[in-house]
Every structure is written in structure tokens, then in C-alpha cells.
Image (cartoon, rainbow, N blue to C red):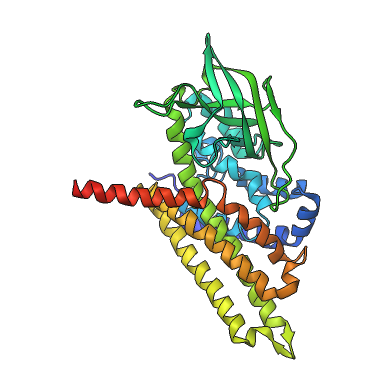
Length: 389
């Protein structure tokens, strides 16, 4: 018997999420932007709907959605300020999935139910000042001390770090070699001695989505904090979690682009120049057509990538390809949205101005566009060489 949420039940979930996003969150976007925080009542509503654990298996208190269903929700989350999704994104995604896929039964029992309920906010602590899109460059160290591990290092741009209760920390246990990259994953409570969280980063956009540096200064954790109970789990956990996350980010980008398109069409139909709606001008229509085409292509590609991931057919090339295409596409659509709006599109508190700033980050995190190109191109060449050797 499958644990997958059925189509009818998922249709109800999707309807509730769409209503919540468009009726409750969209009208408060400027409030969120000005305060640089998501109001407590919206956070509580998201928790009540199960959004902190929608991708966590039902046995651990989540909704148990697969990636095909996840991306449908993500396209809805992308329709509004990305600060909303940031509240629960790491719980369901790159942090939570490490535990779901690689945690021991004891680790799952200790953390997953509280992650799914929103009681615990989990942060994925991978990026460092000298190691971003390529985890192989990690400098954070973990060394054994009796039955414990001691962690030292600094992480950067860590989503939800100021709110986090748990850090999923990637650290080097030895130098890379033929037997692996020497990276392990540890579960570190935010209140552990030696953990310090820096001030919130002042970012270009995504107000309300908090990030900051995290420093681990001789942080002692027990052997039971080692994810999966084995050092070699780490690098594989990072790669699998990032691949799934890349499809999710691509879907977010499609949602952002859809909102930018809708705002552009509404503005072009309602605003006039010389007594004529600007949407009657062919050059404006051409911009709208380019926006629509990009959104439609991105949506189809996201759905294909999610299906390939869930079936196991492709968990490497397509996730990178879809993130590359959709995040670049969202940037182009947002740029055209500002152009359609003219000077109005450059004004603060106009939705397309916020979208223009928000989507720029999507091309950077969970692997930059350049890294995605290397993954896709390198995989294609290696595949061709393998067929001819």
C-alpha cells in the first residue's frame, strides 16, 4: 500500500495553500517587507496547515508529499514574498530531508515530529566563506575526542539561522582521498555551548527571510549526533538533498515568474498612454508573450524534473538543468515586468520591484547557475564517453 497522498486529497491541500497565499499573504507583502519579518499570525496559520512538515513522512507527523506534489505547492509559494516559504522551506527541504533519508531511527524520533510541527526550525549549515556551491571545499572541521566530536568552523548565509533550534552541519573529518571526500553531517542544537549566531544579513531582497553567519567554536556533540551513524554519509546526503532542493527552487522561480507575468498583464490592460491601453502596443505584447512562454516552459520542465526525481530516473542532471533554466527565466521575466511597468516598476512597494530583487537570489543559492552548467555539461560528456569506450 502506497503512503502517497492521493490526488483528491492533494487537490484539497493545494486549494487551501493557494487561498492562503493569495488571500492572506499577498495583501500583507508590503507589511512583511517593511518590518523584515513574517507576522506571527501568518506563521501560526502556516503551522496549523501543516506547512512546516508537508514533505516529512506521515509517520513522523508530516503530510508526506512527494516531489511532484511539493513543486505544485512551491509554485504557489513563489507567487508571494519568498519570506513565507523561507519559514518552513529548510524543514521540508535540504535540512529535513537529510534526516528523512539518512537519519538513524533514534535521530528521526528525536527530531522529525518537532520539525514537522514547526516546534523546531532546522537550518542546513553547508555554505562557508571559502566553500559555497561546491561542498568539496569545506573547511569546518570535526575531530574525535573520546566518544564525542568537536566541531570548529564558520558557516555563511545560513537560512533561518537566527530562528534555528537545530543546525544540520556539514564538516570535514579527514582530507579527501580515493575512499571519499571526508565529509560528515552532524546534528547540532542551536543552544549547544560554542554555537554563536551572527546578526541578520542585510540583503538586496527577500526581506523577512533571515540569514546569518554561524560560528562553531569547539562545539562538543556526542557520537549520536553523527547523521546515519557513519562518517561517509555526509557528502551523499548533501548531494541528494541539494538535488531535490534544486527542483523545489526551480518551482519557486516559476511561481515568482507567474506573479510577475500576472502583474504585467494587469498593468498593460489597465494603464494608458495617449488614451490607449499600453497593452495595445505590439512591443508591449511581445514582452508579455516572452514572459508567458518562459513561464509555460518552466512549469512543464519542473513537472518533468519532479517526476524523474520521484521515479529515480534522474536525480542529477535534470535537477541542475531545471534550476538553471527556471531561475534564469524568472530573472528575465521579472526584468521584463519592470520594463512593462516603466518608471512605476522601479518604485518601492510595487510588486514587480520586489519580485525583481527577490528572484536574483534564486540564481545563487543551492548551487549557482555556473555550477549547474558544469554539472549538466560534465554529465553529458561523461555519458557520451561511457557509451563509446
